[in-house]
Length: 138
Image (cartoon, rainbow, N blue to C red; front, side, top):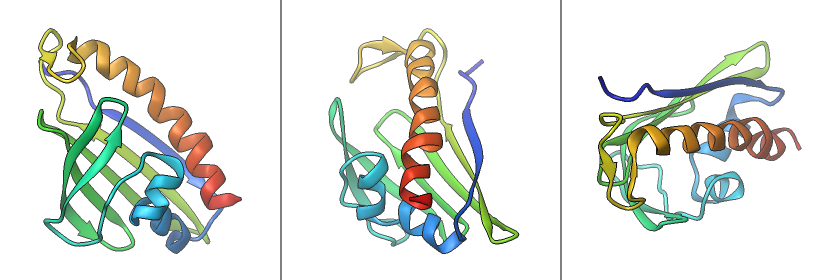
């Protein structure tokens, strides 16, 4: 069975439009995640500057201000940002899916999906709960 998706859900004390700007603009994404040349356009191909070098991405779904889905890398990863307005605040759910088999090696890192998934799971928590929170609530 493929490695399980990573999912992080939190509520930000910020209006949905402010959270959307932080997760669906190049400047916003760079402020909490990684440098990039993202554009809000369905099918747009962009690059995220990851620790392993430039990583190709593509906008797969775009429903402002509620949903952004993009592919990340050449090995099947898909990242979804889902936003829902709740009483003037924003419920935010990030899902990192598209993992391969646990023992399959990811070429860029030369590590197994199961290992990289663990590293990424530990990374997404602080990115969403600390860095993104500071950007949208600060």
